[in-house]
Image 1 (cartoon, rainbow, N blue to C red):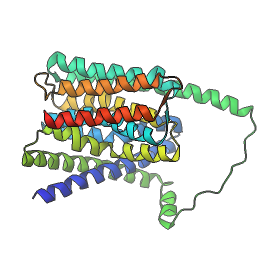
Image 2: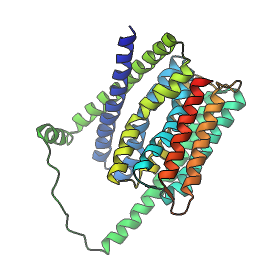
Image 3: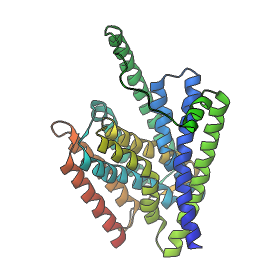
Image 4: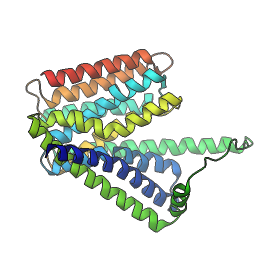
Length: 339
């Protein structure tokens, strides 16, 4: 039975990742057909897609009253994203921090992390009204983000008109028969709708499988759902970001690596925790060593550490910073299993 649950856990992760990928492709294609600017699609639909696994797992956990998995997934993913993912990626290549991340994204992440702690401690839970506050801040942040991006895009287009276009270099990447068939089918609206719906179904189904399997495994080994949420579930839902960031770092394509992680963490708190708390109050314990408060403080500390490293001359996360992040991540996991 345990082997079956482990298989279902892995299957759930696979469905979540591939389902989110198909959902993003379908939704982005539909938005493009509706003449929505590509920039807006990237900032909303694509960004939402990267947080779809966390969103589905946390909402499913909240509906099933497994709130420790729900909040543990959010906090644990944020810790993994900064200390593990950026830590590992920085060992391969320095990660530049964009100006927008310094003046907007990082301050919003710090505010969101502080809100999570403040509202959680205030009522010993994240209730539906806390969720509304999170979602309101999320809408405000996305509005500022999209407005600023469109403004920058308009400036860029004005500059392009005064500069002669360069000839395209290199040859297009060759695709197999399946790739060519997919490209052809993605031109059809009905196929995009089906792709988005199937992807959404895979995300929901995968999330349900994952939560049920994680609960069984936690009970089998006598481990708390909080630990499972902070480790197995959090790392599993962060795997796409981990693989993407490390591969990008190895290839030297690091321009948006830090920004993507920061954006994902903001989505996790404001959208994921906000939406999950609408279905069921997310218990926020403050007593004892094994409390959500300690975990949320670690997530906040990780965000502060990232900001401090980003403020260093050159605004790059280098190997020393990466090693320090990984050391903090290992120390936190040792603490989790020893306390």
